[in-house]
Amino acid sequence: MTEQIRQIGARIRELRDISGITPGNLALKLGLPEELYVKYESGEADIPVGVLFEISEMFKVELSVLLGGEGPKLHVYGIVRNGKGLKLERRQQYKYESLASNFIHKKAEVFMVTIDPKPEDALLDFNSHPGQEFNYVIKGSMMTIIDGHEIILNEGDSIYFDSGYNHAMKALNNEQVKFLAMVL
Image (tube, rainbow, N blue to C red; front, side, top):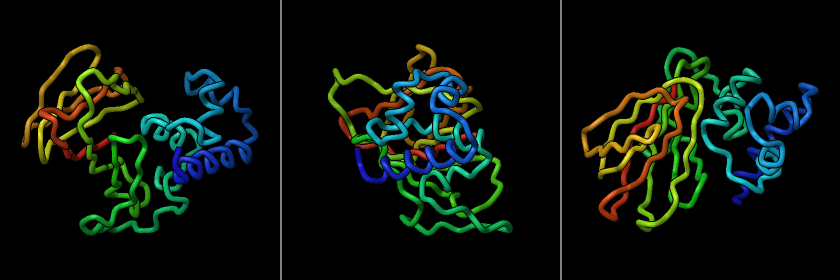
């Protein structure tokens, strides 16, 4: 895993330690096997954004604190210039750029997500988390799978869904896809 993933795991471990919660208890609250949770903390396994979102809500810290180590400070408005958002590369094909990391007490997490194409037979990484999600395709095409339903989205299309259901995204036509994602 990348150094960034290890640092995120260390920040989570620190929050958990300060709160006096055992790894087993936090894993139980997150609905995860303890062995997997321990791998998240140690940086041995990639942490899904949905799990990061849940952890940030449990510990009442901004997601940007987990991702970058610094808390947001702006409360009237926040500007993120093109390409300057807090970057998170979770998996080889997925790149996230936080577009609201500098605004405090936000009601949604907003990301620019880029997914590189993967082989047709590659397994998708499914994920679920509390809340809702909105995705708007800016460039390319993608398949979104929600609770077994396969939906094709092209440039200019959007989807709003209950993110508590298992979902995954995949770039189509052997081309990169770029979309705006809002997690509420």
